[in-house]
Length: 291
Length: 262
Image: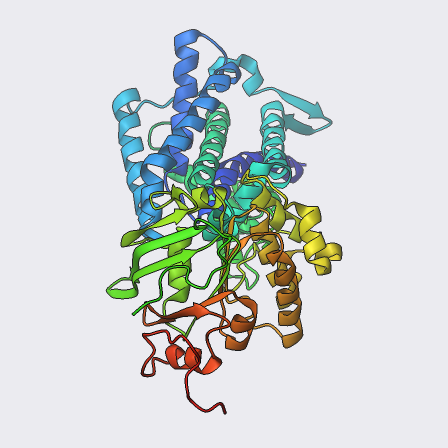
């Protein structure tokens, strides 16, 4: 039963990793930008939620109603001001720029919020630790909510890319930006909106991360690694692959922790390495969703 | 030395659909397009011929706005589009079917067309009229573009450009890499296109096709326009001489040259 419980924990943790990963996957799929500041943007989202709950006494879910649109705007501005200029300089310039942005964000958060460790869990009271008991199984309520949110976000993104005009323009721009311009698509606007959506999802991921565990200004890079691993395990460019990748990573960590808590991260990294080394590279290495 | 602009055109045509003035473009240290002047009348079909590396593709890409111009201007009808980005030029009615067709490979045929329709310019071209002009696409609308034959891809590429309802349609190497039968099919569709009144600028390697299809031919050599004339006035030998940069190609004789035909 312990194993089943661990797998269950791992699956819900995987939902969180998938949430981290989908924005990463979207930005890479549409613009071929690997956003090294992704984890730090998520931590920024978590701090913004924390600040809103402190200032206005609202619960974190209510705070998200403000923070998600705000982060959407941050993403839009980030693309228009920094990343768009970098794209002209080849594939490595955006990588360096986001690396720089990560350092700036970490230090700005440190300066503004101090190195203290925070959590959003107190804002939702007993809900953070509540669980349903099914016989000897313990199903964490928050974990299920995170997983449901991840599925909803991924399904929403999939629908958006498949069914809307802007989604169609995004897929076209991802495949051939020059040609998309030739048929009247404003690639800068498409890029800015893709980044906006990606950064908005980081706010959600950051908030759920802050509800599940503690965070501080230096928490970002670790979350970036988990998100990145989920994307690679799932196969770049496939949104459902990202969900599967997140879950595989989460379950690997949970099972590793079962052996010994310090094996949790190692187990996740080993699965990631195994997938990287495998000839297929990625569980669902089909580029159907974003690219 | 050069013919007056629009010489030999039907006099009922007035104004210009596309005016290129002193346009210069290059790649790094290389100047691919030396100052080029080009005027295309509304409804005219202009063929741009020249050897590989003559600068034809760079010229078209610069006119379309996806390659930066170093100098000069581009006017579409009465509008100066020089400062505008490629997508704005497309929305104003300037379309380019790029070399190599450049379909969105993982989108279906219908989606490839829909992307172009989403640019917002409305007119006579929609999915129904494009399918009527390219009947071979009728049963392929839900097929991904990367699973089409070359000829089918070219039809989608032209159809996609038409979906933006262009006033000027530029076509870069439409027959490249296609079977003779597929080329015939593409040109049959282009012939019906002419009746729609769209202005066409065509880059074509096949001189016979170019002379047969176009109202006027200009030949490009090392980034410069070296020969210009109506299709009726030029012989294939004249164009061939200009094409390879042989002597006497910078003037346009009133009549055919005295050389022997092979």
